[in-house]
Length: 63
Image (cartoon, rainbow, N blue to C red):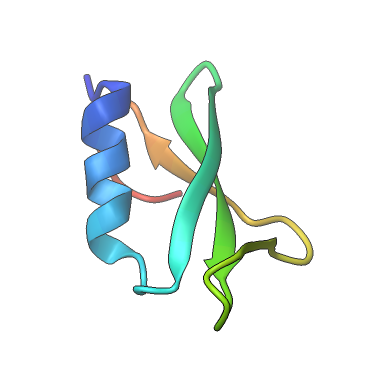
């Protein structure tokens, strides 16, 4: 099983430099992370639409 910290590291390795994790929660089968965008001023801006990335607890793969 993949724990939350391992799932966070998996996602962080795949993110572009201007994307950050702004929140997280757990579903029965995945760790879920919401993303934000760092603008030119260094402020974190919310992304439009569903910005949630899900990492499978079983495989560690993005869903």
